[in-house]
Image (cartoon, rainbow over all chains, first blue to last red; front, side, top):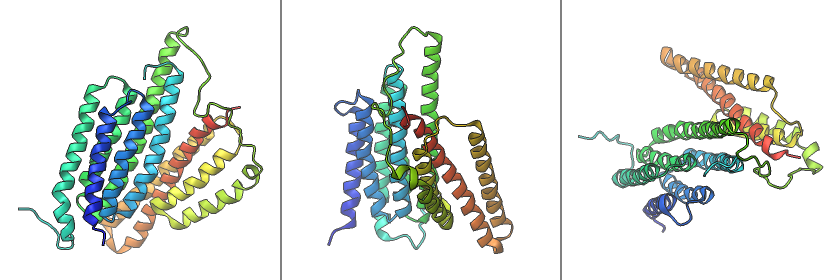
Length: 86
Length: 231
């Protein structure tokens, strides 16, 4: 029998580690690496929402994470193309 | 004295403090990192972490109220990210306009190679698939239906070749958005004025939300088309 609390605490640990990696992790001078690191934290939040039975919120989080990643990539690439210091 | 409704499961009550502390830690890490960075695009990415902390604190409630609060929070965060990224891009364009000799190499884009979708299925199928997706989205109504119908609009927008966004389309989308807000507000007010009409007001709000989400997702698809259909 798998405990629900296991998912909950694993999700919390994943979210905290992911946010630490986003803030001060290796290679975060590159904004694309930083964007990928936020995915780790958002997977942790997904596990927490799963353990709370919030299905609709989980689906919306997945959908908005995909769209936000696309928007951020577009902004990063446009800014690099125009020669801004990113 | 803390008031806890009787229908909240005891496991969720025992997880409450842990979730709140986790949210505070994640939010603190995000704010410290924002305070230490200079570049705006890094700050925009780190704002995501603050959004995740918000989700932690809201989801710790553990009832349907949490689900109802997370949805608008995420959608507002999405719109905010879109708006701020557009502002950053246009500000950089103004800097280039002020000093045209600085640097202009028009080589990179979201798809560096010319990304021409010359598949036969992209010209014949999208009409039918987009129609089915939009019809199914209208049948579903609400947020999910809006996402499905918006997916249909994105598919149609990506597969058709026309470049540039006509002014008429932007005006039309803004008008649809206004009608959606009116439906939503009428439904909300009707729910309090005469609660016996709850079914009507529920469907008014659901149809308003459908129009709203579908037009937003379609607009994002039209923005993406500018990048993809590059010759």
